[in-house]
Amino acid sequence: MISYYKIMEKNFYKEDVDMRDTEQKTGVAMEQAENMAEFAGIELQDHDPRVKLYATLRDKTSDQSLFAEVLRILGDTEALNKLIGAYHKVGIHCPICLKVVAPGEECR
Picture 1 (cartoon, rainbow, N blue to C red):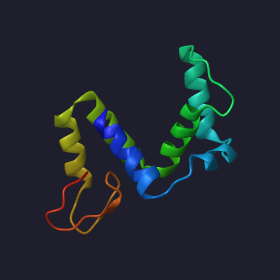
Picture 2: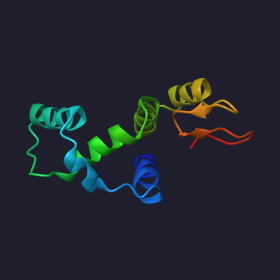
Picture 3: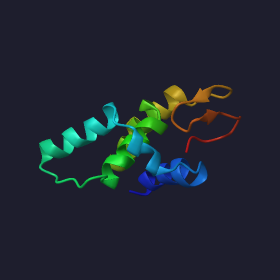
Picture 4: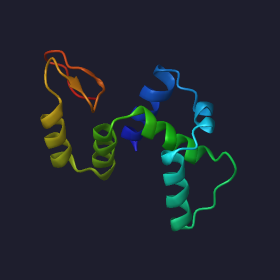
């Protein structure tokens, strides 16, 4: 779960993302979260923060970054290292750590 908090820090605290902004987003991400919750039998409240958080993460992170978090949470370090190796290249924008990589810099 520590890696999950890294996403939280990066996207909400350091970049000052306001989760209230997602209330205006009635698009695909919020519908996906609501559908997943319904399928799983999870009761949601009006303006449920879990739906807002999912929509914000989905909107503010890349697919590669989300997949990297899944691998971290599951403890699949071999697959995570392969993913990082494929995308984290010096001088190129890394879709996992979301920055241009400097020499010697590790992926979050």
